[in-house]
Length: 183
Image (cartoon, rainbow, N blue to C red):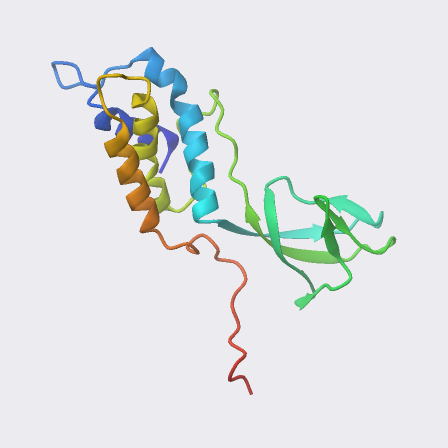
């Protein structure tokens, strides 16, 4: 789903139509939309993590920064085996100075921040089913300051839809090995 698709769905939920059936543009609603989508996407990424894999070549200094979107490292591998001599400390890969080997990082990622300048063509980085929950969150946030209309119905629906999502759907990298009955 794109940001533009999400905005259109929010406007439909809020019933922002003219008498002719066209969607109307309310500057107050439009001004807050991107920030609310950013909050919702980051909430969804906590609920249903975004799994990523990256190749990193060590620079030999003994410590180098992780990719900018890393939330939590799941595994560090060198030549397909766990790299036991590399650690993550304070957001950096720490290793023996002089090491210039290539590593594979499996990690949970933070989605890109949606700013007021983000284009409507921006694709959400979460799964499609998670993205379909977001318009209900944004609609609820838009209605909070409205003293006449209750935002609670949209927010409860958002929480219900989010609770139905599988928690590991976005984590496609790595795997689980069954070792209890392994031979």
